[in-house]
Length: 290
Image 1 (cartoon, rainbow, N blue to C red):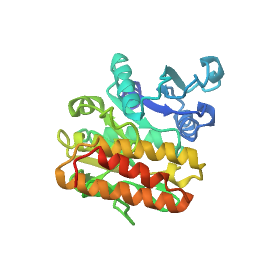
Image 2: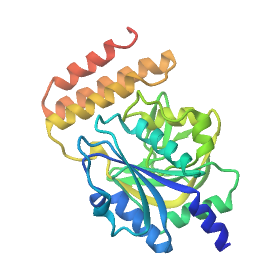
Image 3: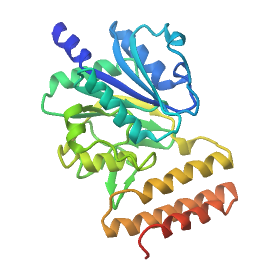
Image 4: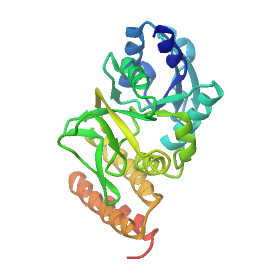
């Protein structure tokens, strides 16, 4: 069993996307390192830094002895979709079989990596394992997926579920690399918002299920954090671009336009700025006319 566990560990790469936050200030990086330390082993981690300037040098991270670190810097901030695709290419070059995707804002429990390993051992047919993600308003992921968007759940049982009914967000997904590749990876034109839903829509064409582990993580949702008007406008622009570049049926396209406009109105009220509504209409006009 010990050799089996060591083999699985050697076949996993963690891919973490960073933006303007050093690894040692990242909840995800710190908590996953503690999880590796708890297993008294070393995990391979790929840090994809989308910040304008490099966040760190490797010498700054020598104290994190339970990670073997590879680092890639994208000064042009191409988005999380391209970052995850880049990470998977690096993982493949390192002969890995699994990737654990993470953003910088997820806090993992100390037994997280052990639970992922046990899940692979216990179910050799499953190719996608996910945690239950919590945030201040309740369950962040999984979500009920319907009409081109995710709807929050009040509860969901642990175990195997169908992607026909549910979707999941990026952070915390452990996925078999072959499944990732066969699905076509992430759509890079969907840079941030909706990247996870578009990715899962691709995945379910080649693998229809996921297993929700008895693993609870905490997510700092970007919309759950107080930001300046300028930052909120930049983030909303990503939201609009993501919606514009999703892969839709015509019916879902109409619904998405409605949700973009609704989000723009809510933000306009919150920030007392009509700029959100203006950007909503600008985005909608780039799609098919209603």
